[in-house]
Image (cartoon, rainbow, N blue to C red; front, side):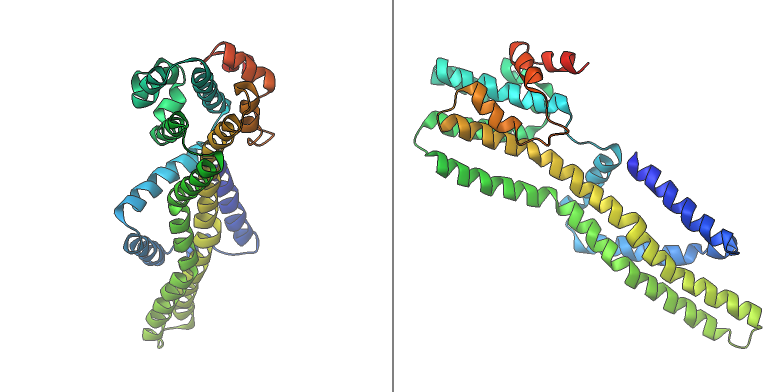
Length: 292
């Protein structure tokens, strides 16, 4: 929603300011200049990126426009799953715990946290490291190094759409110059025409430069930044898992280990201690009821 509101404000101010200083808005109607710039930018985007990145960029665009960042429910579900698993690690046998992490889709623990079960990558991340804890041979600092490496890899992969959009944004001003040069070539072919006709052709050529800069700094760059913000916030769930499990491995009881994870959430999004405690007593509904 913020992207749409911001875009409307930008268009309104640019066009409104142009008209207020006496400009004729019909001069800016140059569909072929837009075709050259937009087509070249999209073509370069396709040439630069593999199919998987292109598909992920489309998905990331949808997430950015919808503002699909983790909400309190997802944070509480993550903490709830970790609490249940840490509690079982202290009180239940290895076979009972393995039944949860080997088949999370059929596990009552994971079914109580549908937002996490839907996130297959995060579910696999949790199960993999709980499995390592069960094995018992790995030291906490070794697990931490492995987690850091995997989180970095996940972050790099999930930010590929941001880098792809940023590259396209950086290219647009230069592509706008190409469109402008083509327009000037067209104008030079009509050098014998009247000044009014020649002026219109040169003005149309300059619109290409304007469009390239506008698309770069007012459209593609803000969208790319939104993709980065959304994906970075989504990746925070992995950091919560990391800090919680490491605290548990270093001897913290489950309740204290949860605080290590909760504190990694930004203060303006962080669930309260009361909401977390209520969630532990009533998984899947306590925190939501508290928030309501």
